[in-house]
Length: 259
Image (tube, rainbow, N blue to C red; front, side):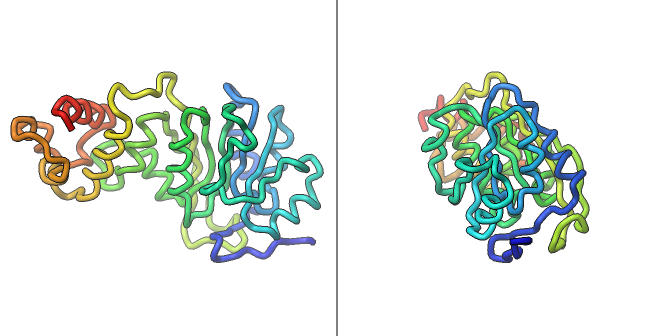
């Protein structure tokens, strides 16, 4: 098998630029973990550079044709290829609670879902890096005050330091996507436990941005907050005007209000 055919329904765009692949592999610090899981390796252009590093490399791939290709071309991966859907698979069948890094050239159609899944596993994932559609990568790393600052920005940056690293042109893929790509790195904060209910924090952020053009006072009506709390000046702001720290403070106020 010389090549795997890119499948549109899987959002596959195979990276063909070796320098870009090497640069993405080099975004990993290899600190604080012994394992790395690559999501959607395709034909292994990034995988080969990961295998050169002093780290235990696993890959997870839903495309059976790609799995066959990897088995045939990368003997070092034998026993380390998970023919599964990352969004549904229990990774602890393999990693048993051990820390690991996540990396990949992520399918654009599910890249946000991959991030949310990684957030669910944040206690196990000290580092996460890879390639997204440029707009999504920028959104994840965006700061308050921007129109693109939103749910992903706040939830990711509550637990990780987010850094946009570099932009990748459309012409280094086969087939080329219609948009540019961006590579980012997330490094988990040293103290990533929030000083508030994390479940409530997620609810507050998602509910606030659910009606982002409204003030916090209006967008959080469904939480049935007390009239006294709703007089706080923070409720005059729109969600994109609140930093991550201010969302945490808001959650603390709501928690103290008895929600």
